[in-house]
Image 1: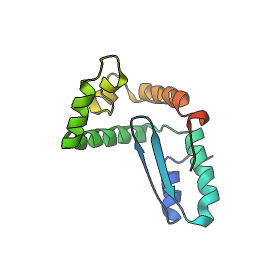
Image 2: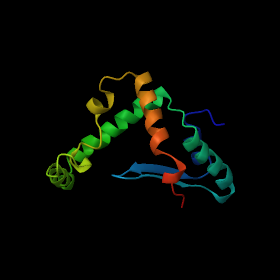
Image 3: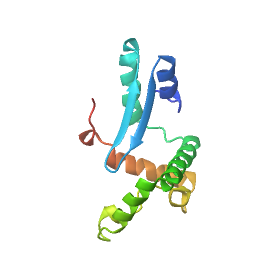
Length: 136
């Protein structure tokens, strides 16, 4: 219903709101704040954003670079270094012992944009399902 890749961001900004998101070890959190009179349409747009993600290749590349930038920032953080050393000491079969954030090398390895789009769609369909979501 909302085919523009930047449509949700544009709507939020045009309605006095702000938004952000982050991914932690086991959750992805989307945060949106809107004026009350825009809330109903905002919920429609947000639900469409999750029900029918566009996975526009132009924005996928932008996100890969954003993840890489976040990773590069974390590498310099002393507390993050300690965290990663502790994780590296975990049992090799534990997911905790694996690299978890992503950088240009790991996110672009051997894939072109159509392969990446297909992989993202599959991963999204498996993990972003209503039974795993909460709304607050």
